[in-house]
Amino acid sequence: MAYDASKDKVLVGWENQETGLQLSINQYGDGEPKLQIGPRAYTKKDGSRSATKAGRLGIDDVLWISEVIEEVKDRMKDLFIDEG
Image (tube, rainbow, N blue to C red):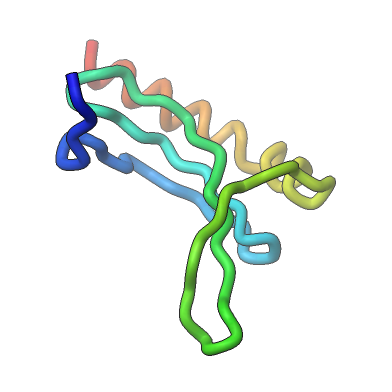
């Protein structure tokens, strides 16, 4: 089965305003929602926004994830309950 971009949905997302790291809960088709870490958003010199792989996480990213992980967990639980 080939990948179909129209079936790939971002259900909810978070972005660290300091580092650009993004977390999102995604779902492909009727599959279970899953947490994605990355990409990392940044502003180019010309002012436009772009994204790159998350790469290795620094302490700022880890501390931010620890701050939002309870909210992420609660949202994922809600999504699983809604599916069940």
